[in-house]
Amino acid sequence: MLTTIAYGLAIALNLMCLLIGARFLFTPYAAATGYGVPAKTDRAYLTIKGLRDGTYGLVGLALLAFAGAQAEAWFMLVVALLPLGDTIIVLRNGGSKATAFGVHFATAVLVLISAALLFAV
Image (cartoon, rainbow, N blue to C red; front, side):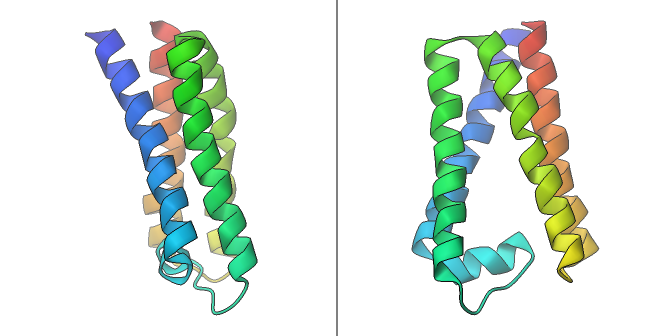
């Protein structure tokens, strides 16, 4: 049961990274607003974010499929730094606290829970 939950959460989080990456690639300004810091220009930076998030999703799925739970757990532990950084970025750039903590910080907590579950498998 624990293995199913650990793998399921890891897969879901990695797929969410792919979806977020795709959103930044295809609807960058709407995605930036959802991120918590609206952008009127800087499409290149929004594209970079899309590629970054999508790549993290793909790497996570590849690790889970080909290297196993321990490798994915270490990956998730490191990746948790990204949503923590996103929390700070939103707060420092005038975004709402609700988005900073309700989206980004909550994501960091979920990623850390995923890492802990994968270490336990």
